Length: 130
Image 1 (spheres, rainbow, N blue to C red):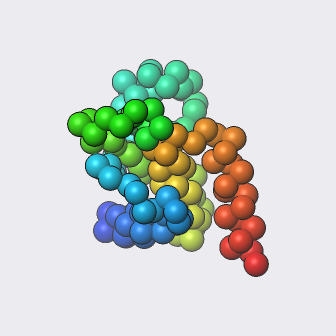
Image 2 (cartoon, rainbow, N blue to C red):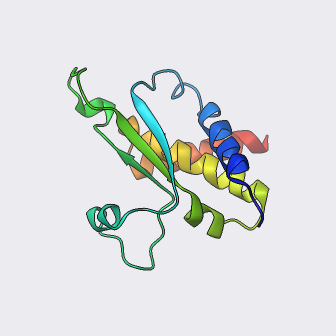
Image 3 (cartoon, one colour):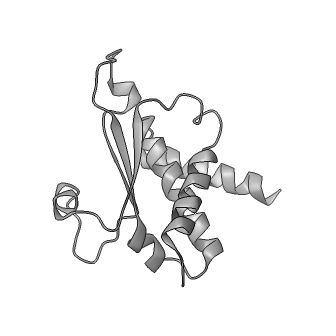
């Protein structure tokens, strides 16, 4: 698939702008970063096998664990370009995969576990189908 850097960045911006309510309202002090691939250090930290793919990564202190602390370094959500490209067969699928990845990492910022994220994913998907 042919895709310029600007197109990918535009898809990422659209995904950030499409974070579902109410989760879009209270995102503060979070940097969204675009990288080609996860670093070896990130892969080791997550105990990933060589064949495992990583589309995005939240690094920070989830809101529920902050106990009112305001003076923290910015949280970071990194989106990995080439794993997303490799998993997408079309621009529409890429756009969808980026959106899902951004939402997934933002959900971790809010302290949601994978079970709750998948539950909300199903609800969001069903609402889009109506």
